[in-house]
Length: 416
Image 1: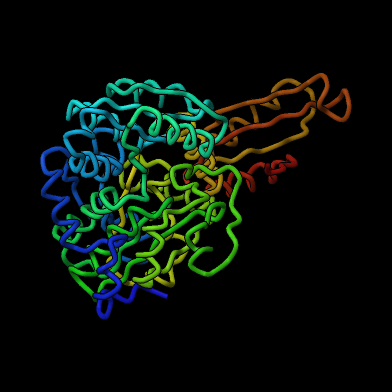
Image 2: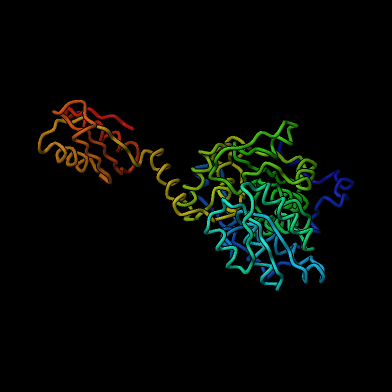
């Protein structure tokens, strides 16, 4: 069910594990000037695709490319003088690592970041570039986390949790205050969910500011841990996903408690919708988003009936996507949209046939971008040859017209 607001929850919110608007406003004052107040902008192309009015909060513009700076900056500002002198430690294979490293460096605090051995070298280098000491340990995030806790105990370091921490949650909630102030007509907010810190902080702030708002979380189908916990189901997650930033098995206890009390519904989206979200943001909004950063848009595409006709705000909460992954997502989407076609032919092995096919494609407005011509081994007989073409077209209608023109010339065409 949608969020039910904060009315009647005063007693529950008195728990030290939970967050109020006052906590989030204090965090906003604390991090002002240290974290960018990112723009909240209308996205009409995405709105047309989703059937609602859409506003995007561009937290991919933060210095480290993600919203995690909000929570890290607030939590580090809350350290005692002794904790600052001793130093901090965090475990992360992604955006939290860079956020802690950047703001620790800004405050002159020694930071150690434990990352799993599989962490891509670019992320290690970026984290080190912010002045942190990176320790590579373990084959999994759980092993890296255990080592980070052990180092914290041994060296007296303060552990900065990526989401199960009141200071971090309050810092993440500052995003909702900015969204509501910059786009006051919004009636629905959608936030990606990994460990739950962003959704918990933003829901607490937003629903106290405007109890009539509807707030949703969104998870990818391979990692619906928060949705499963809220439904009282056993946690069953796993598998590859382009939304690795929200691929979390163990959600935070503090975020879970607040999300449950607020009655927030967490929507689950298929992997394909996340890829569609990344591509739509890149083409339609000219915004680069990582998988987790596009999860909110994925929810708009995957659950149109829930959001039809509404004024929806959602963050692009991160833009740290590998260039190769981004190019693969965009190409896959072009194939799905019918704007790139792969055509297979068995053609007579004689001069001029390939040129004739290319000419007919060109006359119909297509552009051949790749050719595979196998004469020796792929064809069924020595009198024929196997041809595979990749063609760029305007849309599926034009693609169908090209295939029809080739078939009218007696070529047998198979689509890949």
